[in-house]
Length: 340
Image (cartoon, rainbow, N blue to C red; front, side):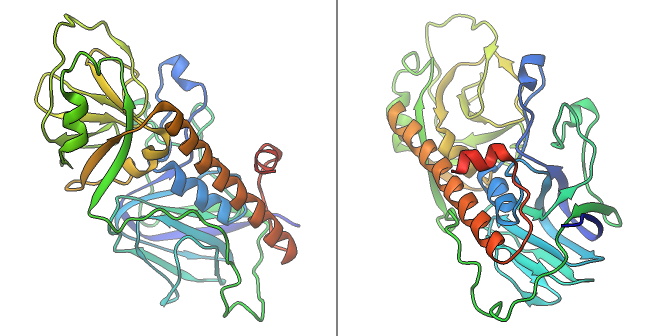
């Protein structure tokens, strides 16, 4: 297939729209946070649905309306929080591949139940990279923010797709779609290094409700709710802090660290969110209520492996479907091997 350039013109931008991917590999050894999509699951699925490698560059949209037009046909997918998506005024589904015709106008608006949407295009979005990733790192002068009027360059082999059965749900794929319906989320957690030092923290986290505050950002979520301060620890030497760490600072609040956290800190860590729960936390917005459920390490590992297995199944099905209908597929050999 011949690769060509498709121009995506951004007509309206969201409250915040950025280039994004799954983050920087090995950057933390050099003191730079890995960054990457807050909701890694939604970002990976968006790319898989258009035949890309799950680590490809895509767009992360937060709130407002995002509107673009395209110079040539384009294959897209939109995942993440429930939202209204239209192509030339007609409603189209999220969590599915969507064929956009030449000079098509796409509107993504009214996100609800979550914080972020992910927009993937079949092909390669051209943008700068920092330490091998398109993900923003504003503290290093790499904001990656997209503005209205900007032209995005897409290199793609997709040239349009017409099929007599497109009025039917041709793209029935085993997509692992998370639920955003509940107003109260349950987050699985495991013990942290200072759990025992905070007497009663297990019972407290398992029985009380917490609310995300407006002070939350890409570094971490700040939650209103009861806390117990660890005792007898003295001064904690600054140490590494993983994504999903539950910190209790000097004030009476709970912090859950995200992908753009600083890499070391001196606050006690009383729990960790499981890896399978991190994408859910990436969708939490101010006012979101949540409770916590303690699980064993073995269960946390099994849940994460299952989430990755489901992504592998989806990759395999997309590859088979796209091959059958002669649509481009851009996954790398590494991803194909992982999905086999």
